[in-house]
Image (cartoon, rainbow, N blue to C red; front, side):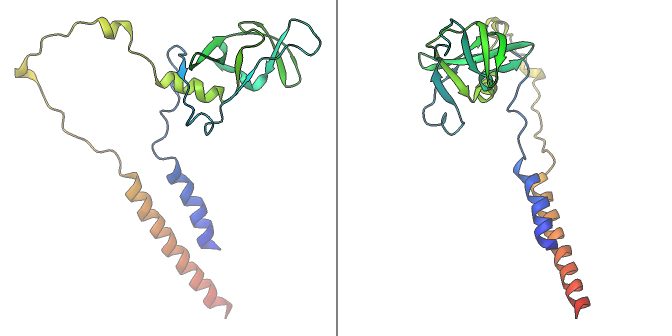
Length: 183
């Protein structure tokens, strides 16, 4: 029992090593190219926006379609091989649906699931800024060039492995000790 608990507690910590760069909170939301091979696995679902059931001109979309970031509300629509971010203005909500007063039209292909994933992808694929593209290269004085020495980060995986082995040994010793006391 102790062994199972130790394994259950130690394993999830290793599953998240290296994450953290998925979301970037700066920059403009950009369009994301459609990738038929991975979009389904990422949970991206697209459906056309239907006319309102009551016959009005209202555009109602699922609340799950919205992405709120940097003080703005966006949704993504499929358009010519890309998922395009569209800033929208919302109105009243009706259950799981919300009225869009500006930004969308009936018939557009709306991303109803996976908007946050697309938002994250759009920020990761930022193009170079105009200042970076237009800056002329400065001449390099080769007498002052220094080569950085490679540095290593904290060796998390070996430490985690050693920690897991240590926990297994302690857990095994405790199990043997408890088994001996029962007899």
